[in-house]
Amino acid sequence: MTDFEAKKLACPCCRHEFESRLVTGFVIGEKDSDFCPKYLDGNPLPQFLHVCPECGFTGFEADYRTLIDEKIIKRVSTLLAGFHWTKNQILGGAERYRRAALIGIYAGKRSAEVADLYLQATWCSRMEGEDDDEQKGARRKAVKYFELALAAEEFSPDDMPVVHYLLGELNRRLGNDEKALKHFSKMDELEKVDPWLIEWRDKQRALIKQ
Ligand SMILES: [Zn+2]
Image (spheres, rainbow, N blue to C red):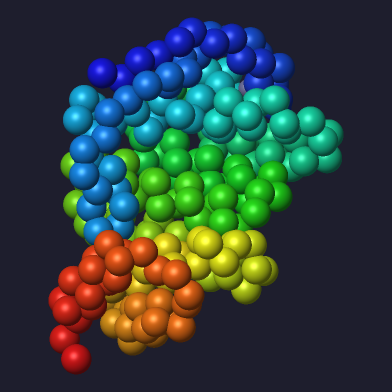
């Protein structure tokens, strides 16, 4: 069962106050090879992002509390004005994550956080029945921001196996076989890689024609 709890939020951009719902519980079954969860009782991911009905600001509950820098708020508000928001517009999950990623970039979020938002956009896109072509734009951006995050050394050593696995798998799904193989091989240079992750890597690597 996905559980919710009512929560009052105040938009950091337009100050509008509205009631949203916080996800307080859900059940995950297995995961796809790009870690897309297979939820047993509906996809709760869209509900993690709250959309201001007045201006279209989209973010996690924490974003509503932490976005306080006036300069950044102005920058995000300018971005939102470009979306031509219609009051009370309904956004699907994929659209929410793509929008939150873009807002995150304008708000100065770390590349790793932006990458994660784009990755989750591809998951929602799949769960909402969009075909793989629709997912590709967000997947390319996820790869780009994971790479920027790597270059900026945003990940701890413990994160590295999963990051290289994901970059391998996302590149494989994009048809960038050479880059995929490079990231899959990188995992051999790392200390302490969980055996299940090696197993997943081997399975996905075998799908690439060499
Ligand atoms: Zn607002």
